[in-house]
Image 1 (cartoon, rainbow, N blue to C red):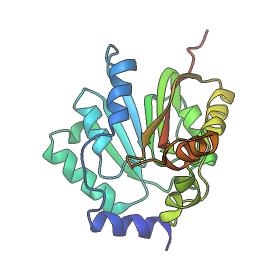
Image 2: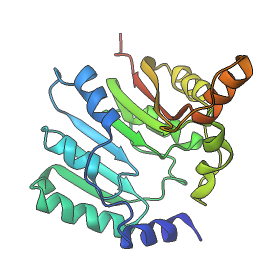
Image 3: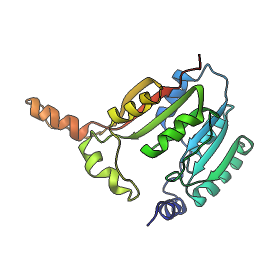
Length: 220
């Protein structure tokens, strides 16, 4: 099953229908953007529009990209029902083959749980100097995520370790404003008796995701 077919099926089944924004987007926005004037944002693999709508409600113009026609149709319906349709544009696009997202168009790019290494140069080129990028992705340092859970989605290829993504971000000249691990497993841990059990707890029950907030320096 290819990615488009898979996501069309998921959206028809309403498995990804929530309009609640990711808590990290909310906290990062409050910390890094609450005092800034709204601009133009790109919502990568935006699905049914939860982040586009949330940003539009705060005055942003947003472009939403997603591979699924079903997801885009639902996003349009959600935008209309929330009164944000005039602030959001929508495009069905396969981000696995995208080479160009424009040049210095966006003040903000948000990428949640879709991040291909090959896409990063296009993301870096698309953001304006001074613009912010907010990324969240699975954390393969957690062994359950890196060896099993990540691959429950058959379109996933390889998770990106936090150090690798940070290197990709900084190699493009971005400044990392925040790097944070998120969503530790809420379960009873092994009683810590020595260094070994401490390591087991860390790698089995540690954060399942991580996020990076990075800013493209302004031109001098």
